[in-house]
Image 1 (cartoon, rainbow, N blue to C red):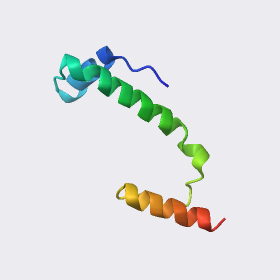
Image 2: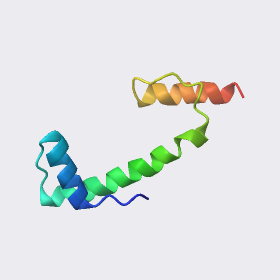
Image 3: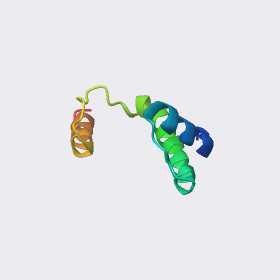
Image 4: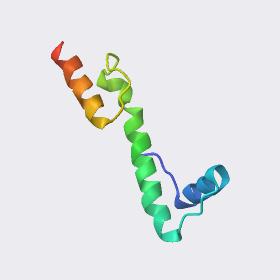
Length: 71
């Protein structure tokens, strides 16, 4: 999993968004961001080329199941 440090989270949120995050929230946000980046790296391997851009998770799953059924 990519290493996103709590300090990086704090700095990015402040510098990019002008948002101050509490010290207690930094570590959980960093962990979640690292997990999301890891999963994003795997999207190409899922074969979702036929899936239209989703408006939500439910639509994405429906389109993915439809594409898988055609195979």
